[in-house]
Length: 177
Image (tube, rainbow, N blue to C red; front, side, top):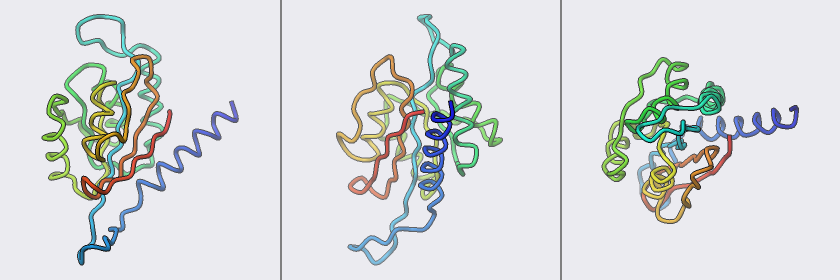
């Protein structure tokens, strides 16, 4: 248990350190500093085994609570979710802990979602909760092609941190929680 706690603390510290860097990065090819926007992207937590718009299982709710705990000291400026019970339920503990609302985005038009988020929250930190197919696709939309691979239907633990400066200039960090 101590080893797991240590690993979680190290992951949290890495996430916190990366997210708190608010200094603009000087782009060598431009005279003006480049603004960096941080996206934290996760797939929804474990879902119930029902066909129509399932909620979270007990394990899923625990994972959503763990996400909120991990992000408790990370300054987040906006929280987005698709319009499904499981994604909203995954985002809600973090939103409640930060006294924020969960905004909705359309996973079928990720370019428009990215453009909207960047226009509203450029230079900020954004939590985005999606699905096994939309989350890696969104990472690739933000950071460029082939930065993330599809998430297997049985995997719920991936957390992507994308530092976006431009479509051609982004860093991706993959963590597990």
